[in-house]
Image 1 (tube, rainbow, N blue to C red):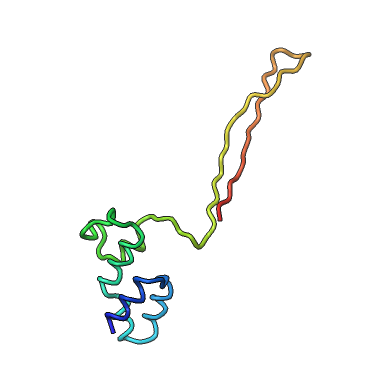
Image 2: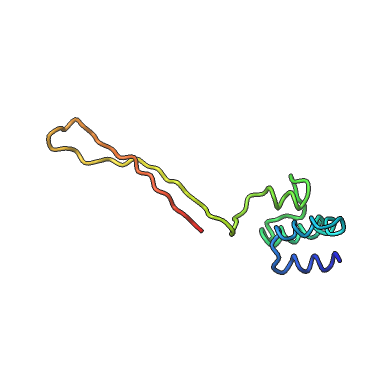
Length: 108
């Protein structure tokens, strides 16, 4: 059973489905918590930068959950703010206008 789980996870299964699979019964829970399955998932996401051991994380599963990575199932929003000088008025030379410019970038 564990071999089949590893094969399915290594192909195209998303790990949210693996967690839902593990919630069905105790046997599937143990299969879903297998360190080798999560090691394969970490290798699929980070490649060789994953390392040989989880390092500061307790397990491969904790590493996959807690280590930052790019998620492809959401929306990223970037807010950028900067100050730009405005144009001086021809009547008042001492007034220095400025603009606070804010824009957002959305990546989906």
